Amino acid sequence: MKKETRHIGPRKGERHVGMGLARERLEERRDRNRLFKTGKGAARKVPDAPGRPASVGVRGTQTIDKNVIAYTVAAINDFAKMHSIPVREANNYLIRFRGIDFLKEHYDAEHLLSFNDSVEDLTQVCLNNGGDIR
Image 1 (spheres, rainbow, N blue to C red):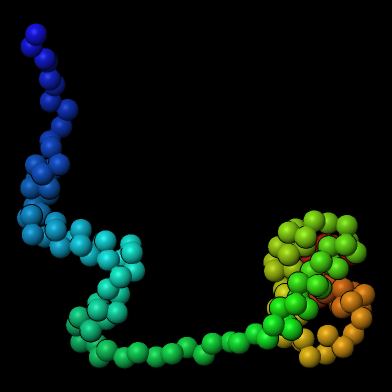
Image 2 (image 1 turned 90 degrees about the horizontal axis):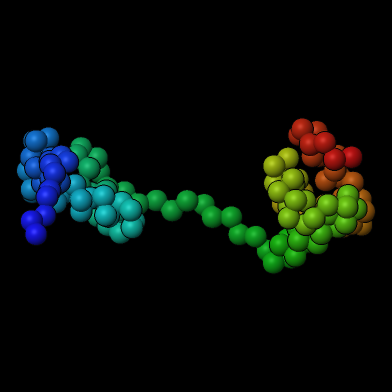
């Protein structure tokens, strides 16, 4: 039995040759893509940039106290209870309409208030930023 084959297009190597890409260039491109996909070698690529000096800077990292995290979680839960919505939906709503940012920024004052007052403040902040939960 003789198998019949059809020509369905150029092979991968033939296609690259037709595009004018040499094997070395293909391997270089493949290696570069692999590095960027995995993130490895990113620091090695910085000094190779033509005409640019290599410099490393550390961005300011914001440290958040465990008390702020605990307070934020409790505030989200109370917000969800007061407005009768699921916690995940409350979290997404507060992120979208800047309620979480408000809690982080004004933690010093808000944690001294009752949770009912904090939830009312969150509701008003979200309304001011386009939210529709009253």
